[in-house]
Image 1 (spheres, rainbow, N blue to C red):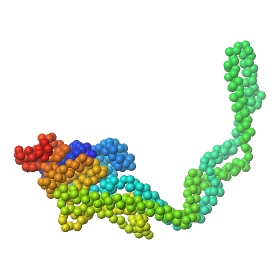
Image 2 (image 1 turned 180 degrees about the vertical axis):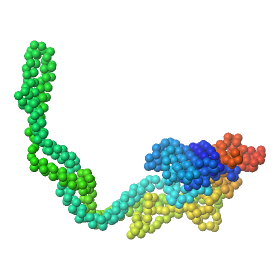
Image 3 (image 1 turned 135 degrees about the vertical axis):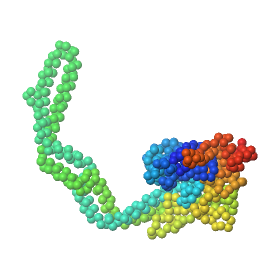
Image 4 (image 1 turned 60 degrees about the vertical axis):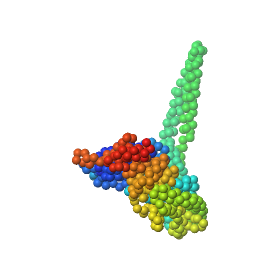
Amino acid sequence: MLKSLQVKDYALIEEIFVEFDSGLNIITGETGAGKSILIDAMSLLLGERASTEVVRKGSPKSIVEGIFNIEGNKKVKAVLDANEIEFEPELIMRREISLKGSNRCFINDTPVQLTLIKEVGNLLVDLHGQHEHQSLLRTETHIDFLDEFAGLDILLEEYRNSYNDLHESIKELNSLREKESVLKEKKDLFSYQIKEIDSVSPEEAEEEKLIEELNILENSEKLLELTNDIYSSLYDSGNSVNDLLGQIQNRLDELVKIDKSFGEINGEFETASTLINDISKYFRDYSSKIDLDPQHLDELRERLGSINLLKKKYGGSLKAVLDYRAKIGKDFELAENYTGSITRLEEQINKLRIKAGAAAEKLSKKRNEAAKKIQKEVKEVLNYLGIENSIFITKIFQTPANSKSDDFLLVNNKPYRFNHLGYDEVEFYISTNLGEDPKPLAKVASGGEISRIMLALKTILAKNDKLPLLIFDEIDTGVSGRVAQKVGQSLKSLAEYHQIIAITHLPQIAGLADLHFAVEKKQNDSRVVSSIKKLTVEEKIKEVAKLMSGENITEASIMGAKELMGL
């Protein structure tokens, strides 16, 4: 839901701040007052292309900022998470258009690319009117609307699992085929490199152990000298620590005989003497194991040299050598058994083509069932909205694939092109005049008619459509009287499922507003400025009455306004 919109120095707008609410938000105002400018600003916020011409004269830049309540919107959260933008219950989107030509975009005060603004905008708002930001006029979205209506989430997930497996296997096969010539060319090289590495057969973490052992062996004479010296001082010399401790022990024994309070310290001394003996034994044992074998030292140096040579040739570290050995081992094995690997993978892919085809066929069947319901219901709503004799068709078709050049899935042993949504292509066709053949919805003329077609589709898709906000710019063009009242009632019903913002000239629609805003154009310091105001109940009555009778509001128009408003 759009909570607020702020527009500054944009065209005729100096600065406005408007707070919207859930339900039906109606905007009225005289022609040229700036209503469409407001929608243009909203369109800019959603990612439409910008021109420096929109910057208000005398200002350095235009700013448009919208605050949306996105609590619980998983799709928006996924996009923000993917772009490392913190998810908050309120989303702030802002665009700045400078006279210098710079175009800055922000989401939650984080600078972003325009493409991200557009991606998020497409998940939040559907804007219908004389603008390009109309999802139903983008043919590629028609299949999404049909799937939403049919409730195909479970079948889509089932298909996508098969699609992902097939897609990855095809990717693997293509990669394998691309490698064929390279593998054959390098087979001999791989064989040589494998033999070279395996002749040394280095082990993980071996290098550190070798360096440590080599360091010990290269200093063996010094180690022997130092350990023998320590052992001699502790135990083996004429005036060793062990002898001194023995003398002290004898004196302590005499002290204990005289005063038993020396017993405790005597015990601790005995423990210390035992520890010194253990230390002496450690140095004696260590020195006895010291290897002064120069041949073993040469062997260690030679092995470390062999490992260093491998490191220089294959990546700079022992890990890189081992990783490279694993890689070329696989590539060599693949080169040796290339034909068999290709055959196994092709057999696997063929099974996956059939599996994905079966899942896609299930989807297609459900889509065709849902298409019949949509066609019937859209026609009924269009008749209700004053477009009689309409024909609405949901065309579902498939494109055969060339099994020699295209990726494909199999349905009844026939190859078809496919994507992440199956093998169906969907497009809405419509005719709004008796005797005319249905044409692609994307090519239908703009204006009030197209807006009512959108309204009809939105009405039947309302419960399934996940877009929180729908904006209708002058949906009432070309309608009046009874039809206008029905358009208003349809908008009111739609507002039970979505936040609606609609610009209108008709009292029948304005009278149903939950919130009513009036746009005015005033002259300020020899300049024209547009502003917007949220109306009180009394102001709303007068505004609806003005729409009925013009500037001269009569008692009859006041009464009529109250009647339309249900007051």
